[in-house]
Structures are given as C-alpha cells and as structure tokens.
Length: 196
Image 1 (cartoon, rainbow, N blue to C red):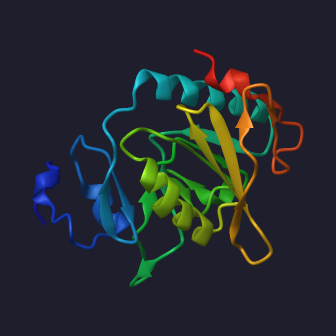
Image 2 (cartoon, one colour; image 1 turned 180 degrees about the horizontal axis):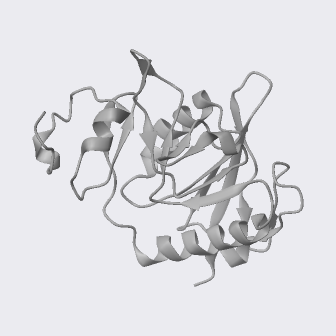
C-alpha cells in the first residue's frame, strides 16, 4: 500500500475506514463521517482558541480527582454510527469532549460516544456543526452536545428526549450560569467562557 503523505493522494469521494485514517501522514486535519472525508477548517483563530482554553480549563479543573475526563482537540473520537465489515468509519475531532466511561479510552482516543461533546463554531464550519455533526452526535448517543457561538457569545445544550431525539436548551448568555445534570456541581459563569 502506498504511503499517503498528501491529501491530494486520496479520492475525496472515496470510502475509508478508521484503519485507513491511521495510516495517513499529512498535515491537513480531516474527519471521517460514515466513511467519507470532511476537510476541517484551517487552524482556529485566536478567539476560538481562547474560548476553547477557557471552557476546557473550567471543565478540566472541576473534573480533577473525579471519574470523568476532559480532552481538547486534536483528540480522535470514533463514533458507533456506521460500520463496514466490522470496521469503524467515523472519526471526529470535537473541540472538547467529556468521557465518564474509562473503558471507552484507548491509546488512539475515545472509542464510543462521549458523554459531552462541545463544538465551538467557526466562520467556515457553522453549517456542518449545526447539521451534519448534530445528526451524527444524536445518532451515536452523545448525551449532551454543546454548541458555543463566539459571535453571539452564547451556548446551547442539546440532549436527547425519551425517543433519543435532541432538544435544545435556551441559549446561555453572559450573565447566566451554565450547569449540567451529567456533572453535578459543575457551575460555569458564561462570562468566563468568552473572557479574552
């Protein structure tokens, strides 16, 4: 099998598995969704990175010495939404994930649905987070999907109803306190998420 060192060596309309993904040795960041390559946006801007650092830091500090773990991108998450010949074909790199079942962690990242997935919107990928990944996280059993909007400085949390269909919270805005039943005791002042 030829060494893949450039994205241009791949058929962007072709079907790939996580095993293929592990052999790729190029700098561009990609995700696989049901076997198909999705190019990720260029490196996030400073505003995005500050928000990610703030939120990850708040969650990570809270989780110290607890059973759950927080990870920030780049961190591979293999989701159980589609398998071909028993091989995983969906791997994403959310901005932040929280995983409370240590059996899902291995040397490559997370194998299974995290408890919480956080995506911070960027100008180039908003529709993707809002549609494709929304459906992906819902179908794979992610218990909470947080969408952080830097432009409007708000956070919306989606969680499944009894039928497994996501419904959204009201937007948490500056002045609000964000919390989740998945992490009892976690209290996040939304202002701290967006502080520069």
